[in-house]
Each structure stands twice: as structure tokens, then as C-alpha cells.
Length: 413
Ligand code: AMP
Image 1 (spheres, helix red, strand yellow):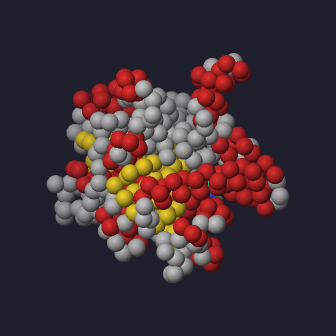
Image 2 (spheres, rainbow, N blue to C red):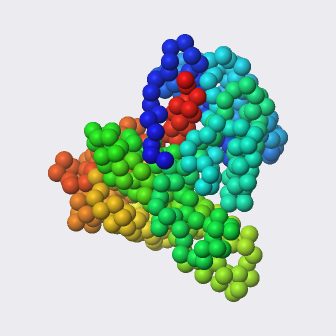
Image 3 (cartoon, rainbow, N blue to C red):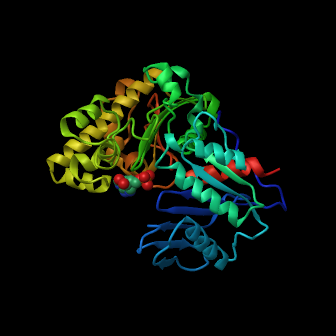
């Protein structure tokens, strides 16, 4: 998929609101956007679904009062979505409104079948279910969210926007693992990549920041949040990304190891007697920064580094070393790099990470201006000096807006 032009304006008089739903295993995030000016009307989060301590936090439209909270058990996604709908209705933004044009759902895994945002039909939903074996942690929650939303508004277009879709343009030689082809194909084992809506949005915004069309630029996007991934985007098309069959591959993350020798897994089974599930938990939940130093919040890690804490310093150094390896590799993949772009929680907020990741890369044309890097701002900005051969930029990501854009582009006619 090339990045579609999803930033048109709503036709006058037609429904212009899009509700974006991001259903996780125990949480639902929602945002209602007005696509006539892309403003955020209301948003919220329901967390710890199924526990006694569930919580809903709802942010009403600007000027419409304070943030509202509900505490107490919310049994399942159905109840969570109904509670969110009640909060929206209390703001005069109920799901029964004729202004609602569509509901856009984040769906983590689209496999090879879904490489574009797709209007959800019974058949599409079945296909998303067929992908559960390759995304057992994510797709079931997304499916529950879709079912509940369809029950609430059966007449309304519902659109699935896939995390994997932007990476579908990767050439076969980048997407295939060098393992037996029959085995790989029988089990749909290949590199799919994730965070695609973020990489699509940020690479397009980076081109705009350079005053160019996406087709004219080559960019490396570093999405550094609690999960982290890099992508190489050539002329608006993704040609390489660091996550693979699952979001475990690639960079060091908050709790995930990123790249390791796959033989570590058999070693753990044979020598430590661990089961596949235990190894899964170890690599996904107890590794990365948290496994290395006990913290996964970069703010806390930097505080400890500044105090001279050795474990935090080593964790930070491993994190930066891996990032540099990917920047170097993706520079080679792209041949010419116009911009390196930082985004997500760490990428947008941590000057020290950006500075350390770029240190010593002057030969690659990469330089960071210390004053620009220290600026805190919520807008896309350059942090490289004018003379630098390659732009270094910070571009805040907005996955919900990108999902709304892609959803609206499909249903607005
Ligand atoms: P995300 O997954 O994109 O929401 O990013 C969450 C992560 O961003 C947190 O775990 C922190 O490590 C990091 N983060 C958030 N704010 C800051 C900050 N001001 N400085 C450094 N890291 C931050």
C-alpha cells in the first residue's frame, strides 16, 4: 500500500464524525473525531476490564467540563463499550447520532489478506478470526471490539485499519525469513511488521516537514514507545521494518527483548526446562529494559543513569546500540536517507535518547543541534542544524487520527 491521501475534507452536510476504537486484551481506548476539521471531540480509556478495579476515564470536549471517572467492575468489552457510549451520550455525542459516519477499529494483524483499510463485513470478520493463530495476543480483543460495536450500530459502516498494512509493500526478500519455504508457508511465517498506522502517518508528516511529497523522500522512522519499531520508507512505501511475525523482533523495548539468537529459546527449554509459554512471557514481558534494569520507563532510567546507576546505564547503552545498528542497516537499505524521524513516547520526549542515538553518526550526515533537541513541543520539528546533510526530526505520532483519516476516506462519498 502506498500511503493514501487521507486528508481530504468532509463534504458539507454529510455525517462527519468518526469513532476510533482500539480494543486491547483488558482495555478499550476510544476517540471521537470531527473530520470536518479533524478536531478531537471526546476520548476515553476503559482499563482493567474483567477485574474488580476496572476504571473508565472520559475526557469530554474542550470547554465541556472536567474529566470524568468511573470505578468498579466492568465485566467485559461489551459492557466497556456501552459505558463509553453512555459517557459520549452525556456529552450530546451519542452513538445514535446521525453525525456519526463510521467506526474505525484498530486491528493488529491483517496477515497477507488485508493490505488496505477494509469495510467490515461478516466475511471480513471471519478472515480476521482466521488470523488469530498468528496474533493470539491481539486479534481476539480487536474482534470482540468489532462485534460489540456492530451490535450497537448495525447500520453503520465499520472499518478495520490494520497495523500490518503499511508494511505489505516490503519486498519479498525483506519479508521472508531464511527458513524452509514449505514450513514457513504452511504456518504463514514471515515478517509482517507492526505500528504501521504510526509509520504511515509519521513518514508522511516528515515529508511535509521537509516541504516535499512522500514520493520524493526516503525516511527512517523510529517509533520508540513502550513497544518500539523502526521502518525504512522509500518514496512513501515501506521497504523494511524491524518487527516480524510478531511484535517481538527488532529493537530493545520496554519489556520485549527484540532481536535475539533464536537458539536462546531451545536452550531455555533444554537447559532451564522452561515451557514455550514461560519463554514467551520471559521474552515479551520480562525482557527489554525491564529485564535489564527493572524499569521500563525511560524517564526513570535516565534519572538512574544520571545518578551513576550501573544497571540502568548498561540498559540504556544496549538500547542505544541496537537503535544505531538499525539506523546503519536502514541507511544501507535505502541508499539515500533524507530524514531520520523520532516518534512515540520515548522518541518524542527523550532528548537524551535522540542525542545518544545520533552520536558518532556524523559520517552518515546525521547531526543533532543541542538547543533544538532540548525544545519541548507537540508539533513536528527539525532538531538537526541547517547545514546537516540528513534532517533529523521529531514528529508526534497520532495513530487515532490516522485510523480516523483512513476510515473516513473509505466511507465519505
Ligand atoms: P508509548 O508506548 O508511545 O505511549 O510510550 C510510553 C513510554 O514513553 C513510557 O514507557 C516512557 O518510557 C516513555 N516516555 C513518556 N514520557 C517520557 C518523557 N518525558 N521522557 C522520556 N520518556 C518518556
